[in-house]
Image 1 (cartoon, rainbow, N blue to C red):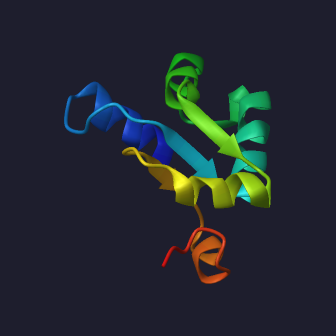
Image 2: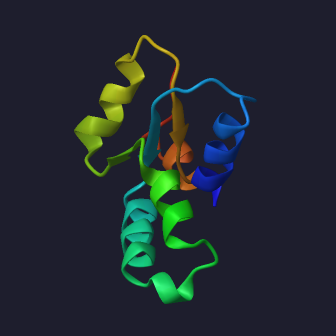
Amino acid sequence: MPLYCLHLLEAAGRIPGMPVYLDSPMAVAVTSILRRHSDQRRLDAGQCAATSREVKFVNEIKESKRLDQLRFLSISVSASGMATGRRVLTA
């Protein structure tokens, strides 16, 4: 649902368009499951497609750590455990 909320904010012009990274292997897996079971979700197919059109899925630790090096505006969506485990926590 956070990805859909970000999509709505961008579509309404309330936030600028920018890369969105889903930096959580569990969230990436759940998103994949939800895509396969369209009859079990609240959003229709068009809403789901719009939600994840610009999202970059991050599964590997190396990819996650590379996000720390980005020098442009972006959004990282992750779970709280990823921050306390140092995967997305930055100095």
